[in-house]
Length: 168
Image (cartoon, rainbow, N blue to C red):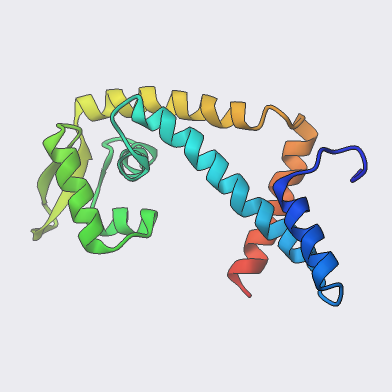
């Protein structure tokens, strides 16, 4: 219940608004403010994990997307764009940096000689297999404060909230 949990920054903000503008219902702010701060806290810790492997979120995203695709760990730039939701120039830049690092290779698409395919190199596969283990451990540690049932409930509620917001 509300009375037993510790105050957080969002409580401070919403209480000020309740005092200054009692006519406003700030209950949505209480949710959205916490989700935003939570996302920032999660990102900060995940970035530390990626940095241990000379990666950032963008590079991790490309490597992980190729790895999740399954063997032969190869996708077209278009498929990568769709999976990661970034602009085409941004993706080209990410791929260039990963090629330079020896983690992915470009090859001509046998089905379209004007196009390319992006594939994990053996080094890229080795690295993403290692990094994803550290990443999952970091994420688990970030949820340590919640029990199994609480995590399930939060997952359901966040999924419902995400669907609602994306269709708002």
